[in-house]
Length: 505
Image (tube, rainbow, N blue to C red):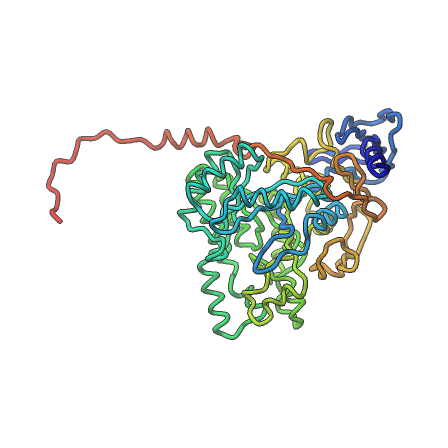
């Protein structure tokens, strides 16, 4: 009873953030931020301090919307094992790094009910999450049942994004025809289609070729799925989605070639979005050739990190120009003994890396410190664009009255060294080990409660909430007119019937 009463007191205590520089995606200004009952109630200079409020001094620091990680896989059952960052560890790592919302994935097995999988994932997550979250749902097979369950998920469960795999042959991979029907159904329901873009057939053949050549280590993973395999699939996914007027979001854009396909499509007027991830912005695939097998295996993910050292800069420049829009992590972590399932065959190494905790600092270091991103652009690519694309804005992604009080006091000049010894993940390795970065979450506030302060967590499992996201969000704003214009351009020609000879077959 005492603990419950203390928690209620903490949750009900108003917060007053004083004197910081508020940074939104469109502007920054010095202001106070008043928070009560889990919401931002006022933003402005010289605000009166509410009676009983706890004052937090943010002088000389930025006050930003909590980060939104668009791509995570907490406790994912995958490749014979389960990711060690469950929803507790994943969200602990999130708030420690300045992220206050995860967009995770429900991934049904082939022929499994989407609703059954969704209910299982909700059961896993709800009891453990320390901050807010929502779900994308993967379409791993196609049937009338899948089509009907997609409708239930959209209309009754708050799901408005579905992921299709073009890779993982015989496991998750869809055919082009199945993708066509999936995209068409998304368009009918007002849901955003997401794609893991790799040519799964070519990957499968490339894997066999590497094994035949005796290349069984982690380098074989990269060699079996070259950049062109990702670029080709990216273009194909965009073309198929456009054919049914479906907005499409390419997850984990890992290569220059794939990124350029997104850029080209957007310049051609197609409605598509691209998501690089922290790993692709902060490190590279050269690590897969490391002489320590364990080190090399830690970097195995799909699509692979590219060995081309120019890739990181290219992707960051496209975030700067707006040609890529968000930054996720694809956080899917496995310990050494799990990665060791593939010690004799890279095809059995569980794919996945960390990133939830370090994403914000990586983007600040590689983007803002380097001069490629302004603080407002940083907020856009780490929070606001995600909230808009996935239709939870302005509830999330902005410092504004009425928004959820997911707020971070961000010290842009503070430094830290990333290490597995100090991170809050459950995994025993960090792919950014030893990297010195600027940009640190000084205080993280989730729905009005301080959950991270002075390098310490103040979290409670199960305190986060599932955020339902309505269909027909901003990504669909241009679709009705586009569909109407396309329909008008497709018409029957009235002509005299052909009355000549017809060959006899």
